[in-house]
Length: 152
Length: 73
Image (cartoon, rainbow over all chains, first blue to last red; front, side, top):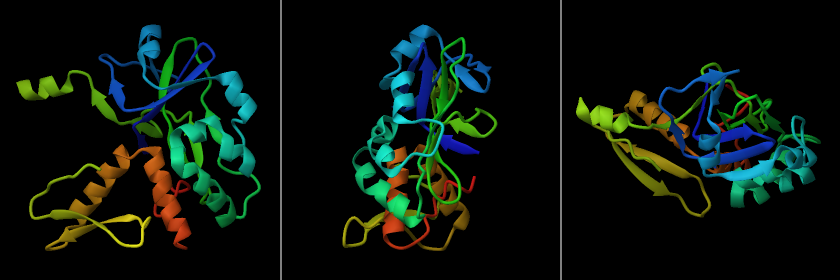
């Protein structure tokens, strides 16, 4: 089970990434993703890409070192660390392809999932399609939880 | 970084030179492996992906296999 407070949300050809997860009241899952309303998706504060642009940058397969170093999702989550991280990862594991960015499919409703630093055989990938309550959890604050706790 | 306070455990952040060495946490007093693991788990859950990447980078550049190994779930 992997925990993350970095999330990724999908809707209408858009992919939004941010940190700081806030659980809505009466949450529902669909295909192991957290269902959002369109308004909730729009109100999420994060960086937005089109899925088409991410597909052009490379998704759902290992990336080359050049692709990884300029990939918009890696740049978003890695920030200033990425420039040194990419060559070290590739050289340590003597890789041609690694650091893939694996997206979840878009559903008929907006959905939100954890974005997890994961992978296999040592190197790291970004997995954006982890199944909630099965292989990953979103960690954060549930709206109203503090008030409920104080009231007890 | 979140500081978790637990009975009989004092947590101190210490930087070992030269930077950018990883940040270690020193536990003073009698060892409490259960408390230490709980603190590490709490930090891991709330760490940003950039923080986790920095941790892996520090380990790899130091010649160690990172404790945060994404191949081990």
